[in-house]
Image (cartoon, rainbow, N blue to C red):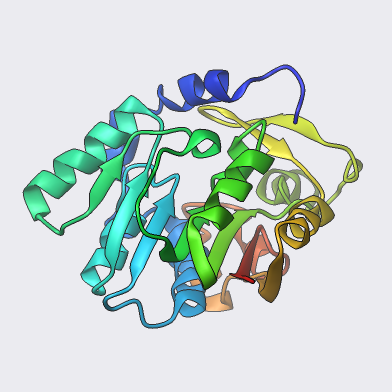
Length: 246
């Protein structure tokens, strides 16, 4: 567990995420999710039609809606009032059959039958006491079910800011675990080995480890609005993992 900030305090931070920021996102999330994260997660999951999928840490529900559009039966778990309310408003309007439940991932309620897949995208790095959350995700799966997650790449978390400042990437702390400040709430740095070793301890078999890069064309198109984004074509800002519950 990362010291100082509790899970409850982290949830309170994320509960202050501005409504206007949620509304400004497209139906498939922000730029990074559209270009780097979503395509890999969807490929890892494969054909989701008729499959029971848990979106663990569903936020404002964009990925739950993407899965439901593709025919999945989706449950979204989200602890914050603000994002959960937004997701439920969308479900009330779209009527996709998504069930949203308010809960801390580290303290999941009874969810019924096991899931075919669990997705935990850009969530674990925001949880101070994260191991119980990963354990709950794995335990929600049927044997042979797939657990996929994405986090900021621990080796390249500050890629954009350092590239803008230096024209290359610099890192001087990797092995320690520590809190990092973000725009709206804290994240937590942990080395890659922390995540992969915990998967092994939970009797999961690694299926794929992905480090997506931005295509040069996408980087060039985005560069005027986001200086330094060309760094994403050279180094991975995110890592994604798919594992099977044994």
